[in-house]
Length: 148
Image 1 (cartoon, rainbow, N blue to C red):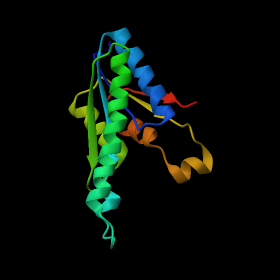
Image 2 (image 1 turned 45 degrees about the vertical axis):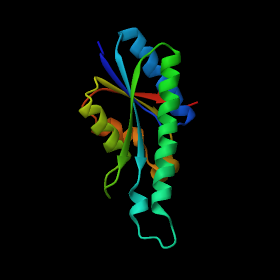
Image 3 (image 1 turned 180 degrees about the horizontal axis):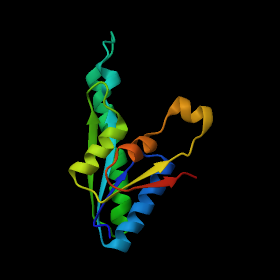
């Protein structure tokens, strides 16, 4: 049914659960797994005096690669070969959800798996939801995995 599964990860326990679900689905469907993590560089475009922007960007990329490497190692330890992608946002107005959907469309994924914290009410209003944005934008099916 699904031959190409994309899992979006951010290093949280919720995204770990989503990765586990994507791995189960990949094993069950004998599908390819692609893992993506998005780093948002836009706040660094602000002109902030006495800040080493390049050092912060290197640190963000390094942290993002650590998230991707850990996710890929998790998949490989389960016997699943996985491609991994570190995607960046460098344009004001671009959103993490949109960048995830762009990665899923470009690859192209048959299904996108992402974790959701399941926030409601004021928390949801204030924090928003990347998973909700992905579900609204994605042209492919989206599997939302609830956090612990």
